[in-house]
Image 1 (cartoon, rainbow over the protein chains, first blue to last red):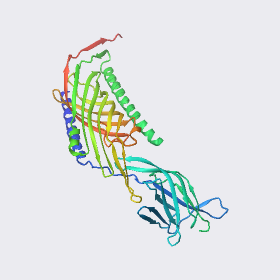
Image 2: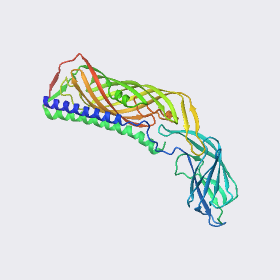
Image 3: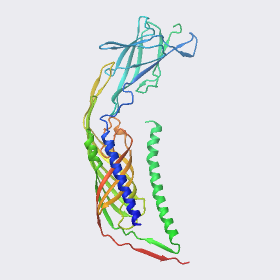
Length: 176
Length: 253
């Protein structure tokens, strides 16, 4: 009985020493700041679609050949040229309650259409690793009819860092 | 929070509680079985003869962590008192602070914390001098947290960065812990033991606007469930120790 007890006690002490070694190891590997794995910018996701004819009721995705989206900032236009796709991601201004983007369905097509976004911002704490971000609630979207945009539909007003949510449907003219 | 997350954080502590109850029930059943098998003719009533013990200890892991980590400090103490039937009343407490000095986020927090609960020794005591063993326990904990004003910057490479400030805030957090570990007596009165803890935040809504980087006694404030480790070095004070007594009752056939 005494031997069994002594064995149990000595095993426990060994486990404790090992546990302390693990603690030293973990403590010495501690990082200053955890890496951020979530998007820190709320993305407004756009899907371009078109009706197959003037009388059609169903829509199809419209892959724009070489679309350009440009943010009209205080420091000039910051543009992105997309390869052929029907899905685009832009961001809203975190320093104002409205912003404008210019858009062209093709890089060789002029003039541009202007999209004006009106929204409310909400400060959102993501985590200590990622800090803060702004999420948005879209009030309205206005646009010009210079090029191929037929109409715009807001499908989801809540703009967060969820990259899978579609917020806007841009209807392109059927004859595009 | 999604329904799935809510269910996860609801059922995890309940499941842990069930496990704990099962372990205690199984231990009780094993003890009863051993007694009845060993002695059929004589029923033995063992009187708890272990006396009183008050154990006061300090967590020696925290100072090690403090030496390696620059943005937080924490200290932790514990005390437990032997009630009866291998059941201990446990109380723990401590304090700590954290300082966040990131380029886009700056604030600091301070808090004290208090825990109250019990430990149940899972292995039967071999003799009255045996104060060590494997245990499981439950705790209810609270921590009043004081957070300074927080300065933040939202990084935006397209539209430009935006900065702001959140005012200071006083928060009280509550959480529940399920703990298990081992404690042995190294030399007379000097105990050493480790335990692991699963901690489950009970009121996380108030931490949504800015969860503290570190809550002393809990860990990362932006997690609803965390695991932690303690290594206590304790000193036991014992008094009114009785000698073991066995009362044997002859069973009538």
